[in-house]
Amino acid sequence: MTTIDLGLPQLGGLDGVPTAEDTQTAKDFASDQEVRWCPGCGDYAVLAAVRQFLPTLGIKRENTVFVSGIGCSSRFPYYLNTYGMHSIHGRAPAIATGLAVTRPDLSVWVVTGDGDALSIGGNHLIHALRRNVNLKILLFNNRIYGLTKGQYSPTSEVGKVTKSTPLGSVDHPFNPVSLALGAEATFVGRALDSDRAGLTAVLGAAAAHRGTALVEIFQDCPIFNDGAFDVLRKGDEAAERLIHLTHGEPIRFGPAAEDGPGAYAVVQEGFGLRVAKTDEVDPSQVVVHDAGDHELAFALSRLSDQDLTHTVIGIFRDVARTTYDDATRAQVDHERKTRTPNLQGLLNGRDTWTVAG
Image (cartoon, rainbow, N blue to C red; front, top):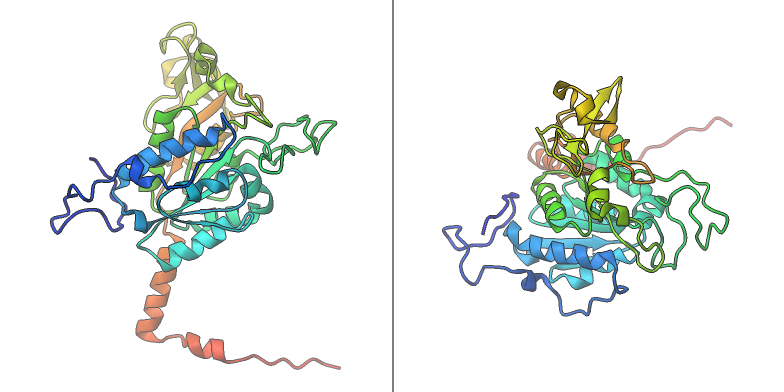
């Protein structure tokens, strides 16, 4: 079994080679709890993909933690045989930050939804991203509030008719990938719940990344927003809409061969990007994806509109930067060794002020 080195305690004996007793499978990561989501919910597909994926990390279950907030997606910790916490609405990133800082031996994951993460939890999300805490955030986006029965969410389209917007939503929705990139996230990806291979590839890269990794997952809610992403699942229609990113490769897509009449490419236009037919542009004009280019990642995120005409999936950005937890631990270790400054003295002391009458 190929594993990903995350710098965490790995399975194996003294020689580091996993033994028969150490080998983990998807069944080992399935808890004894009955999985209870609505029939057809996209959460089932994501759960199956995650269960299949976790054994490839080679990390012991007791060194893996899933923290969730409130929402349908937040039942996730119950269905995994790892440590987990069903926490407070919108506050999962804050709780996960505490875990990541105090326990460097843990692989910390956050499971959240578009309402939990981007409404009440929006502030916690952006600060976890900018701080670059070493945790992985799975943001399930179904463009609706599911658990509370069908109100519009921060990612619902303009004009969306719901129980809380009977005349249609007038809010302009968040683009979670653009939001994450604006917060200087060091890893940002997007995947589709039904695309097991694509989802697993993005999860693997997120797990290998040291720092905050945000993965937006388009996920179907069959009860309150059924078919929201069906145009991304159907043969040639999906091929004309889905733009797959591969680092170092020209960004081409479509149902036809790369130089055929049904082939498309992403090309530079001024300071932005546009989609063009490949037979109408010079090959040198086709943009080559660079996951280290922040400006390119943001421009690619803006190609994805509410109507899903062009939907970019894959890894937008993957760069290295000092993590918040590493920096915090280094600061504390330095203080312990030097006792300069006297932090305990500062904590025990007090300031006084004279206020003129």
